[in-house]
Structure formats: structure tokens, C-alpha cells
Image 1 (cartoon, rainbow, N blue to C red):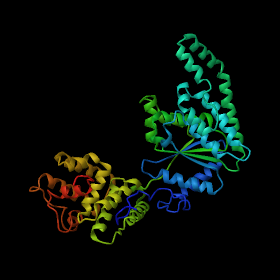
Image 2 (tube, rainbow, N blue to C red; image 1 turned 120 degrees about the vertical axis):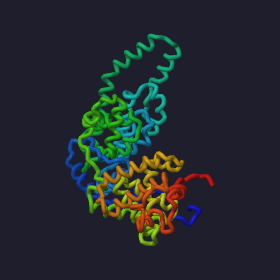
Image 3 (cartoon, rainbow, N blue to C red; image 1 turned 135 degrees about the vertical axis):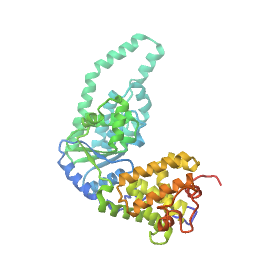
Image 4 (tube, rainbow, N blue to C red; image 1 turned 90 degrees about the horizontal axis):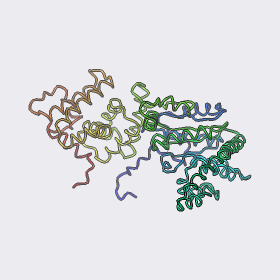
Length: 453
């Protein structure tokens, strides 16, 4: 219960609903991409990793969750890992190995065997300090497997402060190297045997990789390559390639060829097509449908009154001009619901867009900074150039009128109204009209979300 009569503001429209069929609310017709990728996964006999690339807010998680559900329904064994939720763990090998052990468990105890093999690998790859920290976690994830048999010996050596103890420990580590290599081979062999028994490829989704700390992200893709690249196991990495490349450069230096580095670990990058202005009529239809459904969640219909109709029309302009992502559109409608339908709908849609995409300009306008008006005009100019609206179109006139409104705030007595007239003026500042020097202050206050009374 929300305690009010207003619809909840939870951003649930693009969250996966396991109780519904996969892609049941596929507003952007993306199931076809999943069908193509499923065919590709079936042909990737050698296994390995592929990546689905899309910008933040582009719907990667929703797409991945629905595709995973579709694969399960088709008989694939599927795991879904949120890497960001688990990047506090010392080594991502543990995360992946635990998921696979659970996924491939059967009546013959396959999961128990895989956990044992994985524990041996973890003992080799984790530093001793980390083994102490993850001992309890390891027992939880892998059962009773002992990951730190030698911890007490190391602690005793440190307490004694005897140098030759440390030297002998190093010598022992060198002697154990062959055993460690053997544990790697045995784990891969066991995993390969269980994977080969599956009728269809095992698919492991890894989401939010680009949001993890750089060390965890890089280690994860390396672990996939070195330990889990086996036939009939396919990893699907859901990521923003540009951000992940920045993580690689953060690890190895700004001069690193991050694209070449990632290509060593990822077989293919697939770009998830985003709604874009270049798609013209298809894009307009998709954006229109999405905004209509988002507004309907809050009880609004585009044609119910002038305020909602005006906001809807202006929002469509900004979807094109500012290249709003799906998440941006979702928040745009939520902030509209919070502020309530008001007459200056065209101005409201613009300022909400500014709050989402250029918060520093928004804050400057809110504080009355005159330079913020100049910066906002430059931003509008950039959006207009990028969108390529015809000079005599309503969209172009709307943007020109907003520029005049900014100029009017700077010099209300000297601003000529060439575009901010007639129905365009009614659209932007409402039918009753707001004074040029007060329009921004009044509407900004509606969407500031300040807790001050």
C-alpha cells in the first residue's frame, strides 16, 4: 500500500516478470533478436563468451532476463549472474563455479564433484589472506570443501617471526605448482564431461559487468576464458562496451588497446539495437507506444486534457532531440506524475529532460545562474542540430521558442517574440501565459523534488 490514492512510482515497466511468458511486454520488438541469438548459441559448439552491447538504460537486463527465460522454456540449462551484486567477492571464479555446480547437479552427485574440484582451484588461485576471509563463504557455496587447510601454519609462522618459515612456505608453494595445474585440468575435465551430457548448450548470463569495480570485471572475463571456455557452455555478457573498455584502461593504463584486449576473451560482440532517430517511422512508433504505456501506468492518457497532451507531444520531441534512453523515458514520465499535469507542459517536458540529461544546467537554472541560461541555449542548439528537424517544422519552432524563453529570462524587455507566440506559446507556458522572467522559476519548483516546505 502506498498510503495515497496515487499510482506507485516503482519503475517496474521494464523489470522481468517471471510469472509472465518471455517477452510478453516486448514493446520494441526485441524477441526477434533473441531468436537469432539462440540460433547462434546452438552453433557455437566450442563454447566461449559472446557479449550483448548497449548503453546504460538501453534495456540490456530486461532483454537478457527474457531471453534467459525463453532458453529455459526451450530446454536449456541457464544461469543468470548479477556481477555487480557480487563484486565484493575476492575472485569471480567462485561466483561462476558455484552457479555451474548448482545448475549441473543431478542425482549422481555431479554438483558435489564439481564443488570439490572448484574448491581445489580456489585454494590455488586465492592469496592466503583472501582464503582466511572467504573460508566461511566457501563452505557456504561449496559445501564442506576445505579452502584453507594451511592457514594455521601460516599464522603460526608469522607469530614466530622466523624467516626460514616463510622461505619454506614459498618453496612448498613452488613444489605444489604441479598439483595446482593438475587441479585446473581436473576441474575443466569434470565440467566438460557434465556439459557434454546436456542436450543443448548450457548458457550463463553475466549482467552488469560494466558497473563492477575494474579488477573484478577484468578478472571475470579472464576466468571465463581460462577455466570455463569448454564445449557446450556459452557465456552471454550483458554490458556497455565503452564503459568496460574504460575499466580495462583503468587497470592497464590509458594507452592500452582495450578493444583488442577484450577481443581475446569475447568471441563476438552483438549490439542490441536501440530506438534511434535514424530508424525514422519505426522509431517514432516505438517511442510513441512506450510513452503511451508509461503514462497509462500513472493514469494518464495523451488525449485526456491539454496538459497531458502537451507534455506527451513535447516528450516525443525530446526523445528524438536528446536521444533519450528507455530508462530516461521511464523517469521522464515518473517525474511528470510527481509534478502533476500543469499548463506549461512544453516547458515542463523540457526541464525534466534537462534534469535527467544535464543536471548541472538544471541546477544552475534552479539557483538563478544567468550563465546557465546561456549554456542551456547552447545545449538546445546542439540537440536541434543532432535531430535534424526541418526548419519550418513544429519541432524546430518549439526548440526555437525555448531559446527565446531563455533570452527572455535574461532580458525580458529586450526579447523579441518571433517563435514564442500563438499555440507554441500556449504549449510552452500554458494558455494563461507565464511572464518570461517567472516561467522557469515556477516550473523548476515543481520538479526540484526538494523536501523543504
